[in-house]
Amino acid sequence: MSDAFFYYLSHVDSFFWSYIAFVIIMLLGCYLSFQTRFYQIRALPTILKTFFSFLGKSSVAKTRGIHPLRTFFASVGGMIGIGNIVGIVTAVQMGGPGALFWVWIAALVGGIIKYSEIFLGIKHRVANDQGGYDGGPKYFLKSAFKNQWISIFIAILLCIYGVEIYQFSVVTNSLSTNLGLNRYMVIGALLSVILYAGIGGIPRVSKICSWVMPFFMVVYLGMGLWIVGQEITLLPAVLKNVFVSAFTGHAAVGGFAGSTALLAIQHGMSRAAYSADIGIGYDSIIQSESSTVYPERQAQLAVLGVCIDNLVCTISILVVLLSGVWTSTEAIEGSSLVQRALSNYFPFMHIFIPLFLLVVGYTTMIAYFCVGIKCARYLSPTYGLRFYVAYAIAALVFFSFFEQTQALLVMSVAGALLLITNLIGIFILRHQIVFTLEPHKVAFVENESQARVGNESGV
Image (tube, rainbow, N blue to C red; front, side, top):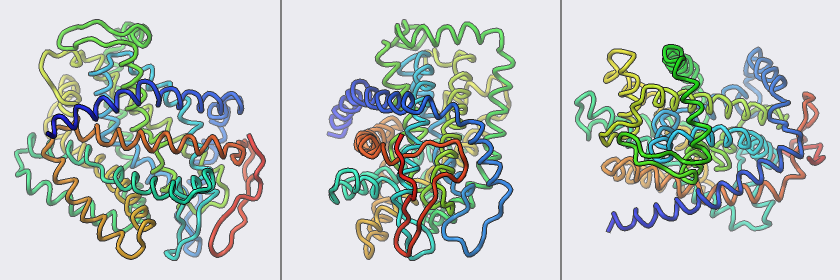
């Protein structure tokens, strides 16, 4: 029965990402890009200036919310993780080298969508009694659709999405297989540290991610760039293959069964959207906790987050393509594929990769789980937390004994429903979004219960 369920679910997922998601992401992303004269590219100097201006400012204890950079690293912690290392290479396994091109396209149009989503999340956020803010799609969609039920629907989907069953499955499998640890002990220990961080809220998650993520980016990108440097003579041929197969598909080679251009689009766009949280909504909830009263500044940091996320995805795919392991005749899951590719260049990868996946997977799982808790409390302030914790434990344990692709499929379908609803809402509210290169142009007017943007000039 479960096989039949996942079989039909895969068809639903395939149809959505092939024919619907690609269209709406491209339409909205291109519309906003042309209307703003590709703001996501023009604003890069301003974005970097914003980042370094926050870097020089310490957090003020009496300020409501969390320091913007801590919020940013909590966001990056949720984006950059196993999805960039394992999930993204499944795009190549299923869609061929051409999937990388569509990963780049997803980032280009996704950057402006992410800016819009974060801007609206902060614009419509409300102050809470914990000294922070509650924001994100469940608030701005209520304004877009003039209907409270849409917010409830989104909150339920985010509760499902907030339990990161895919990355939990990858980490438990990697640790138990490579290090010979008892699977039940791994599950129990991992659950404990996830609950500890998630229940502590975004302040605790942001502190953890602020320490972990810079180290992760330096180590992994350094290893990947070293491999690219070692195989630099192969790079032109690989990139040519990427661009050609993006539009024509790729013939069968080795253990790769071949793919069409449609498969390259489907898997490239879906994995990039999943990795960078393009239009899905969890990131908007996290970044709405920022203490900044200028929504465009936090939204600009979100564009930087998409760039970093896409760079990591690109390095992961290039390592797999340049090493040639993607054509292996063996059936290899994503985590083992990356491990095999890195093992061709570095020793002790059977120890390093499980520990590495544990660290980066943990930051993503706690960021997602924290968002799920906020949505559960939105649905039921009294009982939401305890019911959600019980659901999370059951779902994580249950899916840790399924194939990783099945867990990823559930996440992908939930993300698809979130994406289509959020993107429609962003389009409806597009005239409330301000795209500015001038610092502090958009100011907040705050009161005890809510924060609103003072300047609401449109695109």
